[in-house]
Image (tube, rainbow over the protein chains, first blue to last red):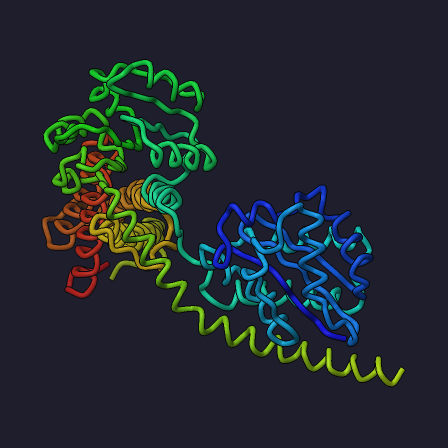
Length: 347
Length: 146
């Protein structure tokens, strides 16, 4: 018996190829069955996410031309010329395959190191394969071990600590400054992709009241429409600062539109309520001195990016600790696999 | 010497300790607030810091503790004065101890007033809370403790 994983991911193939080879949730169950039947493997499982497509298989020892059969299976099933992806496939066998799966499930092989979504996707792939009845003694045990190892890595290392996107960092900061966000008011001045992303995040974290201001009122209306927010006239936005708890500024203005004196002037009217100002604009919309006012916290896009970079660096530092856990878990599993193999031959 | 089982004295001792406890709790919240505020302002965020309670919670904790401690302190001063009357026949004597209790009472009265009227908030309230508690510590180790 040989345990083999073959696949492509975001490091080996561009999205044009990955999307051609990916399997939707609906297709996976059927694809698992066809794969196992056509290639006559003893166990098989397809893991397909937007960043990777991998096939785990337990082969009988005499399966010599497995890779050739697999590429033609994929080529046929996905209707894609095998030359387009053949050289992009990676192949791991035995202990390397075990380690690879552990790394994938723990998010160590992901684009954003330590992201946790992948574990759910691996679980889903396993449940799909169970439904297809294409897993057996080895894959069942391997995936149980995988889930345990991923959990251990998550709890015993700092690999998932710290936010690693500008939006999630901004939301974390908002919660640090303002506490519960559900009764807080957000004002967004100007529109931009990051600003909108941030709004999505804030809404997800409970923010209900959103005001939108834009020099072009129609744009404000359009954005307000998408977020069930209300649009206000651009000239009025300074007055709206009085009620807002969070301000996101991302206009294309060539100069500061929120100055220190504006904010200092409104703080007594706000009854000194804490104020979180996020300046996503380049050149900046908010005068840097604003941060010096009590109860006002100003972060610009570089500040947020620096925190993201710092958190990513912290995660990278944790990789060696993760590797230790993976090393011992995979050695343990490999031992079991070898014993199973011997039993298999004797039996 | 006056008897320790005087009702006013017992009430006085109990309430003074309870109020100190409340002010100590405010002091802890205030220190946590200042640390967190400074790091948020300077944008240097230690991972440990991200696990501390948020600023608005710490601010609330600070002034709520003072809000609880203040009436108890008032009770301590009144019962102390009644006890003094029982033992000496006068409600008030101008000695360091009395002066100290007056200063402490006024300090916390000012903090409560400015915070509840939202004249100041956050960092400065935390700072005042720490100063007020330092007065307690200072006098505790000087001669005019209770």
